[in-house]
Length: 294
Ligand code: PDD
Image (tube, rainbow, N blue to C red; front, side, top):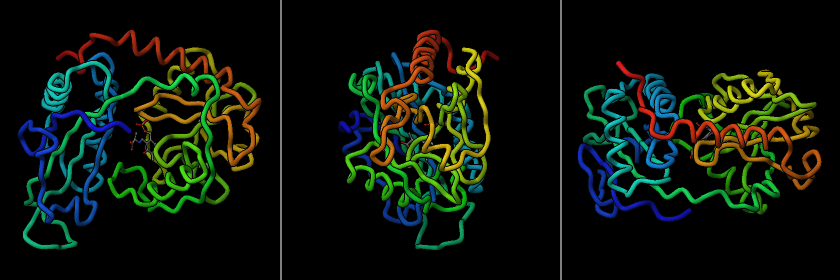
């Protein structure tokens, strides 16, 4: 990944990222007592802004925090961060921690002021080889905690899983538990069988994906049958197509799973229809307001 863009926001001020500092007593540092969001920006406009901020508000609520900013204030802040970093395509990282305190106390202190950190990162166009040949993935047992619906920065199990995929020369680790598909280490996972797009149900085991939600909506609008329900390991391994979705890359085709070809071993027709629908949707949103009027 390329280095982040130069201007960040930390605790109330824009500043050079290289100069941004937090206390080592910040609970985000000591306990990963923090939640985050990653939003893509296309042509200077944060994509799925409301969906990302709604998920941030939900994550905060689940860890007994309130959003430090209103939606209009988030919209203004993100827009200014994009402008200060030159506009165009990029992605934004937003992290809210419970804040710093005098000492290391497991129990939370509701009086703390949260730490709010935002940075912008370059978003390179998708490599043409991915469109042509797809990406590879491995499967691993899901070793994460029981509240993966919270977008927490406590990502050690995800980091280790992604590293196992990288060791195998592949892009993603797809996590399984009790013989069922959960999600990727940093992506939602969907499968296609007999032209039906299947996605696992939401619950505490997986993150509600903003990109997956849009993909399912666009699929339904395009006349692709959609089915949300448990997906077995067997169904994963015999799928015609496997799709990954995540904010920074949209929907990607997985053409190799644990070294074996997925379906025909090349990006499939449902992926290519979805990728086209995504592109059209992105273009249709250009220049529209981030928040509904009123
Ligand atoms: N990750 N599941 C997990 C575990 C994720 O980390 C992500 C995204 C998703 C997809 O969510 P969305 O479509 O809203 O990006 C699902 C981001 C990109 C990250 O951690 O960098």
